Length: 157
Length: 157
Image (tube, rainbow over all chains, first blue to last red; front, side, top):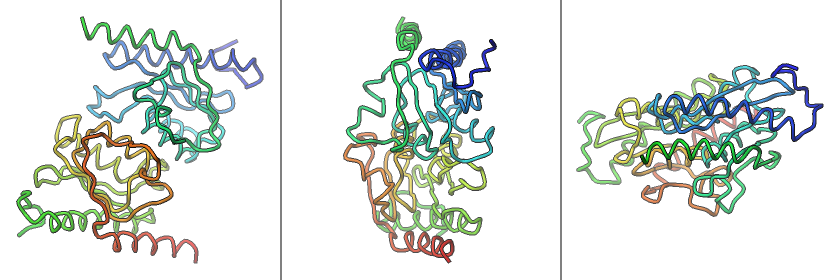
C-alpha cells in the first residue's frame, strides 16, 4: 500500500491518522525551517490535492499559515474555487482567519490534531465555519502538540 | 495638494474620505475586471503602503479578497510583519477571514464604507479583531454600496 492510495473505503479513524501523519510531516518541515511547526494537507477522494506548512517567517507574512498555503494549492490542483469534496487535515486547530478561509472554500471537512484554546476558531462563541463543514478533532493530538511544545521550548532556552 | 501628501495632520473625516476614494478607485478596477467590486488601501503615516482589489475570479481563489492583497503588499512595502501604525481603508466591511488576518497583522485601524450584515465580521457576537484595532465605519458608505449594487444588478439582468 502506498501513501497515496487511500480511497475512502478504509477504516475512517485509520484514514484520519494516515493523513494526519502526512500533515505532521509538513509540520516537521516547518520545524526544520525554524517556523512554528504547523502542517496541513488537503485530500479529495483519496488524493492529496494540497499541502502546506507555516511560512510566516520565511515570507515575512503573518497570514502565511499552513492552511492558507494548502487551500490555495488545492484550488490550483482542482481547478475549482470550492473544496466541497475535500478534507483539510491540520496539526493544530485553525485560527479565525483560516476558519474564515475554510468558510469561503466551503470545505467538506476539517480534521485537526491539537486544540488551540487561545487562538483557535472554536474559542469564539459563534460558528465561523460553513454550516456544511464537518469537524473531527484530537487526531494524533499528542504528537501534534508535542512538536509545538518542542519548538517553543527551544525558543525559551 | 497631491493625492499622496496627507500627513495625518488634516481633518480626520476629510482624511478618511480621501483614502476611501482611493479604495473606491481600487474597487472600480475590480468592477471593470468583472470582479465583485471591493477595494482596499493600507496607509502608514500618510503614505500608501499597500493596495488591492478583489481578485477571486482572476486567481480562481475565493480567499483573494482586496484586504488580503493589500495586507500582503503592505507587509512587503514596510518590510515588517505587523501593521500596528497602519490603517486599512476598505470599501465594504471585512469578512471573518479578513478580520482574522487583520488580527494577526495587529493593524492599528480599520475604516470601512458599506456594512455587510450577512458576511461581515461584526455579525458575529465575538470580537474577532485585535483589541487595539480602532474601527471607523460608514465612510462614503453610499458610494461603496452603490458600486456593489450596480455590479450585482448586471449579474441578475
